[in-house]
Amino acid sequence: MKTGETILSVKGITKLFPGVVALDHVDFDLRVGEVHILVGENGAGKSTLSKCILGAYVPEQGTITLNGTKKSFKSPRDALKEGITAVYQEFTLIPYLSVAQNIFLNREYRKKNGLLDINRMEKESRELLKLINCEHLNVSSHAKDLTIAEQQMVEIAKALSFHPQIIIFDEPTATLSEREVGSLFEQIRKLRASGIGIIYISHKIQEFTQIGDRISVFRDGRKIATFGIHEKSTEEIVNMMVGRNISQVYQRNPNLYSGESLRVEGLCDYKEKVKHADLVVNKGEIVGLAGLVGAGRTELANLIFGIDRRKAGKVYLYGEEVLGKITPGKMVRRHIGFVCEDRKSKGLALKDSVAWNITAVSLRQLFPHGLIRYKKIKNVAESYRERLKIAVPTVQRPCKFLSGGNQQKVVLAKWLSAHVDILILDEPTRGIDMGAKMEIYELMNQLSLEGKSILLISSELPELIGMSDRIYVVHEGRIVHECKRGSAEFNAEDIGAMMLNVYQDAEGKAEWDE
View 1 (cartoon, rainbow, N blue to C red):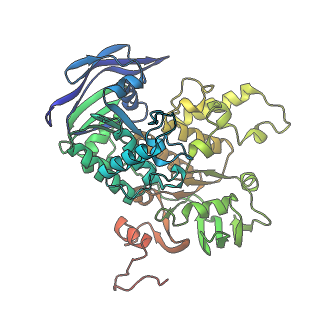
View 2: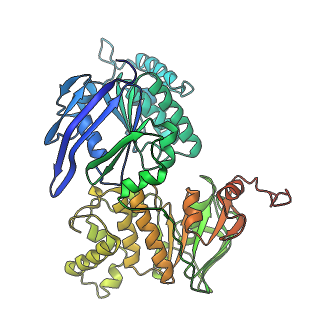
View 3: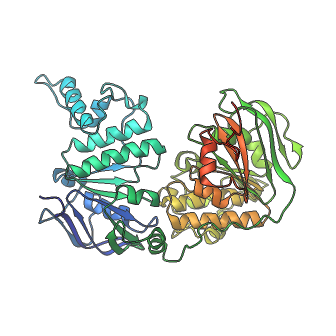
């Protein structure tokens, strides 16, 4: 087929789950050599549509036409046979297998004597990696020894080994740095130029214009519109996604309180990831931590909360030094909460219910005499489900079935139910849609109005600038600058320069010297 011709056509697809219409008579098409971006809030229907195309779900109604012929995929294997594959946000590589073995997993070449033909698999793996300019990768290396970006390239090579005509990318940049994202986009452009049709699912608005040709917006299981990449403004796209006007995404309320809640002096760790850090967070204040990946922001938060051991330094809560060994248990008892970056492995018990997750930290408060009553747990969970607008039919539902945004709300509810006064948020909006982000921003504002303090770690500068009263910039484990809302340097350009340690003052002099 020629570039621009329709390779895939979906008509009237409807998919039902118990109590939910996941897809409601959706039409969609993909052209040869185009990147078609699917956007929408979590639960809007994007991933459900992709799974119907991949054969993971069988729709109740509708047709799928590939190259002009109607198809009925009963399993992902059926879709693979037709050249439809996917690269997911969460990698499927086996850590202790080599690159070549992962690429040909379950399709291994064998010699006549039945032994694995490693040489053939490695040769073809090198050819696949060469197609995406990754021939430098050692195909005999274990997957566990690769960087995240390199693992992503192996996933793409694995997809290419099926000789696909369609590749679906589902949130592929969630765990990548800015430089790694640029490398991924370069490979996607090459795939598009080779005639492969690409369906790209993303929450990140800034990615749309970099690689997309068309956008389809989904909301509540329906396709709202499809249009060219430059036909709508960013604000129009987001308005369609969330169904309401978002002219002001960040609406930071002024801080009405005085007095410090958290003070850190000269904090260091044994791994030298944090070096003599000083910071202050006041009551009712949102304080941001800005820095490049690996700068030491998360490590500083871990030290404050007691996850990592401190080598030196002091931590004060409301003017009183925290004596002895700092542990998470001690900090929780002092009403500090920590929403960690990896909600799935560290923030939630995915197999347990929403109710148990929400009350996990507050059980001692709820039942001081040790007699646990599930009815009370359920009532507490229901109150936070309503307050945080957690989209779940029942609080008895396991967290693994929730969208990313709703999982994050459960993590927040867990700490709110423990009545924390200081909340550390590490990448609280990573991997969630704009609607859920706005709700979390509203919650942060509300908490600050109640006098609670927030230490916010984020890789998104607009988020930090939009929500913070002050921002500390971290570079190579040191806090190198403090910016206050309203100052001339409180902008993305200057803070970005500080993160790189190349900031200069108004007279052109370096602001600090390492």
